[in-house]
Length: 223
Image 1 (cartoon, rainbow, N blue to C red):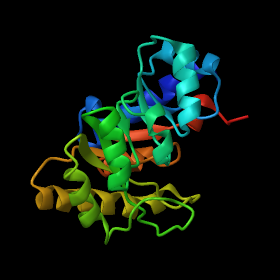
Image 2 (cartoon, rainbow, N blue to C red):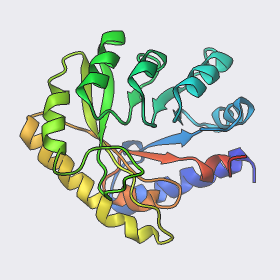
Image 3 (cartoon, one colour):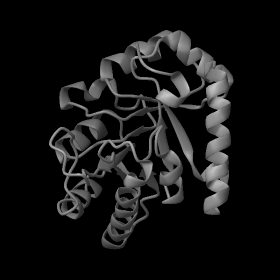
Image 4 (cartoon, helix red, strand yellow):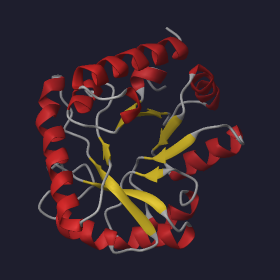
């Protein structure tokens, strides 16, 4: 199947998942994860109708943006970002999906006032992943919300890998519940729930995801 075929299939599945959940289709943004895929593959995806792209590495993001020029696309940075690479990302993306320190938030805001950020929450307690613990999330969220130069717009998570998509459901439900508590605590809306990938995005949509990050199901396996 071509990238266009894959995209049409994903669109149909997302629309069906939204309908089952009683949500409008435009409530969910599909971020096509183009990490390690070629610019030619990205062009195919954009021609097929992809509007949002996600990259994990700052230098790869900068290189692809330069090659694609003024292509109509919303970029998302979805990986762990080192503070010294913030200059490659700040103001270049619609959202930075994983900001878990005031220092990084301040660096992004200094370079791009108003930069949208999300707080990553490590709900599975995996040492191989970044993000804050659920217990630390309220304090970190308050600190990030206090950085006037950025906009804390929500939270994100990545459940532990599993062959059973249903196993992700408790993590998605926990993130939504945590987001709701943080909204009450901060007294402001946190509309973005970034959760769900190729194997479990339909469950994430059922649990309230606003953004799903899909790579393999669109672009195929990475080289």
